[in-house]
Length: 203
Image (tube, rainbow, N blue to C red):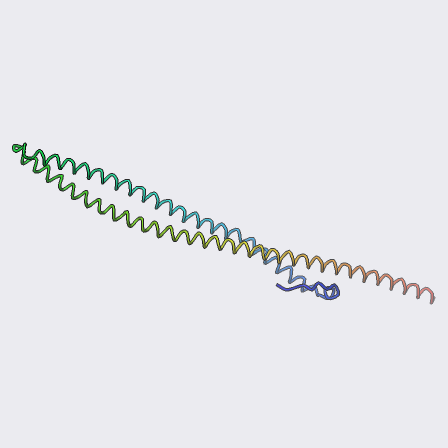
């Protein structure tokens, strides 16, 4: 952005074209600054998006923990039933076949529950790893967004200061031009009066 001389004598010689250029540049800078809030809104929307993702992952982890606890309780219940059946096995020979099927069924359930428990534990570990990774990424993005917001704000304040300084210099220039114009007008009036006086004396 061009600088305007603060010397009244030099400012009085600046052409109207230079004044128009300053005005056009000032309007362009103001237009750019009006777009800054849009950038801020976009950054805030991105922050809210990552915060929502974090909340969703926390709910998923909580649900997995509840399911894991339920599977553990079912496994313990099944194990107790299995032990009871083994103790009663010798006393119930007439129900041997039926007991054998029941024991086999519980054994199958135990294996399935054990497998499900292992799968749930593995998923829990994976979700915890994803959660930590997303948490770290989201934190870095939030920090990056905060830095960008500060940079935009600093740039806006800097440009605003430049515009205020430009406006001040233009006001000084206008005041100087007005003063110069008044002086020229007064000089012309004096010359006109002098010419009229001389002309009147000659006549």
